[in-house]
Length: 373
Ligand code: NAD
Ligand code: GLY
Image (tube, rainbow, N blue to C red; front, side, top):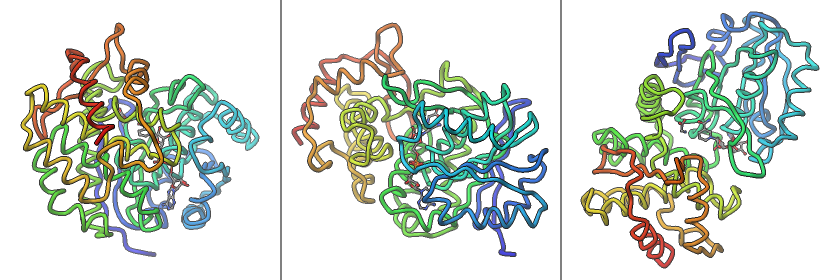
């Protein structure tokens, strides 16, 4: 059996608390961590075709060695899977396996698989257990932790879903070696977000180590994932259902979602790429409002740019932008409250806050300049 070198964190949510284990080769050793959560055979693994090809055999084998049988449900890869139709099909496929209340689902994949499987777990038989085994960097540092589950509708992304916590998160850093570089960078953007919203020393550490981490240094990857997950875990423990401080996790997302909506939530602009541009915009707006220094705004832009992430809408080839269209997407965002847009703005690197007190003329001027850049 391969050696694992791992760290464990706890998400503290009373009877819904759970561990996040981060380390190398956790999937081929899943049988060491999972058995206590699989109270009824078989475990139902939900994955997508890309991940199945690369990593499914390792987990099935390891579960077998731990005397756990499994059945696998294969879904198409990509955002379109998170649809009403995809969801109904998944529910039927899971029910076809003959689950009972003590059955356990295992989500093996990126955020798409984690979100749809978690949502299925939350409604099947009025709630069964599920485990997250995130295989993208974005899923390891964000979507697998905190219990947001859901699917997309014609009215927008993630508009139907639930808060439903997993029983365990296993983040295997080794699987990141097979992840396309563009996906890896998109996940890195969410890592930078944790530094920007509340941890300046972590951002400075990323300035030093981001390049090596992206290039594959396992220890640095583990440290970045652990730091990110512990930041998210502590915010989620304070505000599980986003009635207050959890909204800080949306730094860069108000602008980012508008950019994604305009590009059709497809391959043209990945979520993490949109967040990178959105965080740059949040710092720019904040600097224009006199809330944060232009030096900090420039430093954020420089780091994201240097690692290879887009920082301006004009970095997206073949897309034209209109300020009005972006503002109209922002006005429809989930974060709008009593008709007012909510912004997460920085006072500087490592110090962000939530506000709806923003002069829209400044937002418009910032967007106009960004799409002309
Ligand atoms: P994804 O799940 O679509 O995965 C991206 C691509 O990488 C897919 O083609 C997948 O097959 C492939 N892949 C996954 N792991 C791989 C690996 N190890 N090697 C090679 N290929 C691999 O995308 P994502 O970026 O992980 O997640 C995006 C989704 O997450 C969106 O639907 C978004 O709404 C959701 N999300 C949810 C939350 C939350 O809190 N629940 C937070 C952020 C994003
Ligand atoms: N991705 C933001 C959240 O989980 O709240």
